[in-house]
Image 1: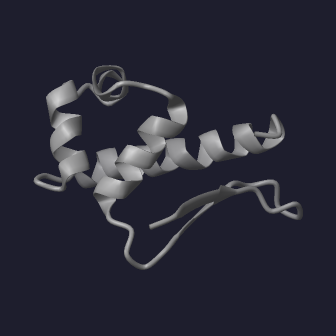
Image 2: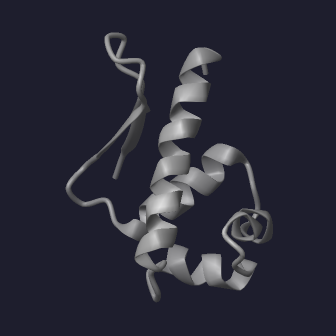
Length: 87
Protein backbone atom coordinates (compact mmCIF):
# COMPACT_ATOMS: atom_id res chain seq x y z
CA UNK A 1 0.00 0.00 0.00
CA UNK A 2 1.23 3.47 -0.73
CA UNK A 3 -0.35 6.88 -0.78
CA UNK A 4 1.68 9.66 -2.32
CA UNK A 5 0.83 13.33 -1.96
CA UNK A 6 2.72 15.35 -4.54
CA UNK A 7 2.69 18.88 -5.88
CA UNK A 8 3.46 19.02 -9.60
CA UNK A 9 5.82 21.90 -10.40
CA UNK A 10 3.79 23.12 -13.36
CA UNK A 11 0.41 23.47 -11.68
CA UNK A 12 1.25 24.14 -8.05
CA UNK A 13 -1.78 22.07 -7.05
CA UNK A 14 -1.37 19.09 -4.78
CA UNK A 15 -2.42 15.75 -6.14
CA UNK A 16 -2.96 12.58 -4.21
CA UNK A 17 -2.08 9.38 -6.04
CA UNK A 18 -3.12 5.97 -4.85
CA UNK A 19 -2.20 2.39 -5.57
CA UNK A 20 -5.15 0.29 -6.70
CA UNK A 21 -5.29 -1.58 -3.39
CA UNK A 22 -5.63 1.54 -1.21
CA UNK A 23 -8.90 1.64 0.72
CA UNK A 24 -10.78 4.51 2.31
CA UNK A 25 -9.53 3.16 5.64
CA UNK A 26 -5.96 3.57 4.35
CA UNK A 27 -6.68 7.14 3.20
CA UNK A 28 -8.09 8.16 6.57
CA UNK A 29 -5.26 6.55 8.54
CA UNK A 30 -2.54 8.00 6.27
CA UNK A 31 -3.88 11.55 6.53
CA UNK A 32 -4.35 11.34 10.30
CA UNK A 33 -0.78 10.11 10.73
CA UNK A 34 0.55 12.73 8.31
CA UNK A 35 -1.07 15.39 10.47
CA UNK A 36 0.32 13.75 13.61
CA UNK A 37 -3.08 13.64 15.29
CA UNK A 38 -4.76 11.07 17.49
CA UNK A 39 -8.20 9.78 16.53
CA UNK A 40 -10.05 12.18 18.87
CA UNK A 41 -8.30 15.28 17.52
CA UNK A 42 -8.71 14.16 13.92
CA UNK A 43 -12.37 13.35 14.51
CA UNK A 44 -13.01 16.80 15.97
CA UNK A 45 -12.10 18.31 12.58
CA UNK A 46 -15.16 16.55 11.13
CA UNK A 47 -17.40 16.72 14.22
CA UNK A 48 -16.93 12.98 14.77
CA UNK A 49 -15.73 11.00 17.77
CA UNK A 50 -12.39 9.29 18.01
CA UNK A 51 -14.23 5.96 18.05
CA UNK A 52 -15.89 6.80 14.73
CA UNK A 53 -12.46 7.50 13.22
CA UNK A 54 -11.28 4.12 14.53
CA UNK A 55 -14.17 2.35 12.77
CA UNK A 56 -13.25 4.16 9.54
CA UNK A 57 -9.62 3.12 9.90
CA UNK A 58 -10.62 -0.49 10.62
CA UNK A 59 -12.80 -0.54 7.52
CA UNK A 60 -15.93 -1.53 9.46
CA UNK A 61 -17.64 1.75 8.54
CA UNK A 62 -16.95 4.46 6.00
CA UNK A 63 -17.33 8.22 6.22
CA UNK A 64 -20.33 9.87 4.59
CA UNK A 65 -19.53 11.03 1.04
CA UNK A 66 -19.36 14.72 2.03
CA UNK A 67 -16.98 13.91 4.92
CA UNK A 68 -14.84 11.79 2.59
CA UNK A 69 -14.68 14.73 0.17
CA UNK A 70 -13.54 16.98 3.03
CA UNK A 71 -10.90 14.42 4.05
CA UNK A 72 -9.57 14.26 0.49
CA UNK A 73 -9.54 18.06 0.21
CA UNK A 74 -7.59 18.29 3.47
CA UNK A 75 -5.14 15.67 2.16
CA UNK A 76 -4.53 17.71 -0.98
CA UNK A 77 -4.13 20.94 1.00
CA UNK A 78 -1.80 19.27 3.50
CA UNK A 79 0.28 17.74 0.73
CA UNK A 80 0.72 21.12 -0.94
CA UNK A 81 1.75 22.75 2.34
CA UNK A 82 4.23 19.96 3.21
CA UNK A 83 5.72 20.19 -0.31
CA UNK A 84 6.27 23.94 0.13
CA UNK A 85 8.00 23.31 3.44
CA UNK A 86 10.23 20.68 1.84
CA UNK A 87 8.94 17.79 3.95
